[in-house]
Length: 114
Length: 115
Image 1 (spheres, rainbow over the protein chains, first blue to last red):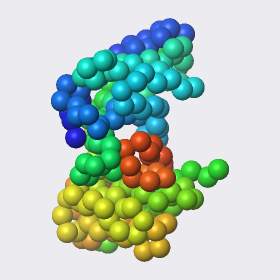
Image 2: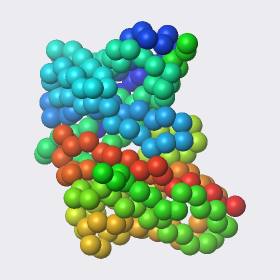
Image 3: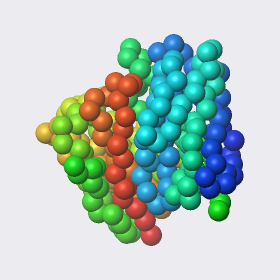
């Protein structure tokens, strides 16, 4: 799986948009970009994923650059409950070996403050 | 509906003992995954099942670790001759299928402490 690079930590004011960047310059054509988050003492929680196009759901938006070498997770109106570790993961789609597993890095610790 | 459940939530054992950790996936999910998370680290893949068979066990650290899923639903992670370094949170996840577009839903984890 392609390696991802994320900043170790970020801060965001409550009510503002949180923009979390991720670099994945070695991503292959059949690899998806996934975002999970982990709130303290809980299991990881799925947020969103995408292949080529930008995606939006009730939790967040995912912006993938045209060359697919980087992406940004956007939480449009961050709340205190969004404080968590955010993981950007590149995962092989169909046809690859070991395409079931997720390979987590260190993630970004997002702190939302009042 | 019910999410992924794991039992026990906490397990304390002594070095050298045998432990079993159980995972109940979401009903209808054919893929099941085990991960291990040490303090301050991201989860680390151990093994995953598609149905009853282990599709990828490349993350199991050594032959003291073994997992089964005999009926394609509940899975048990077994650790023999536990060592202090096995102390971690063991996470289970399930998905409808193991393909790349399928999200994994995680359970709360079992915190294993080896004294």
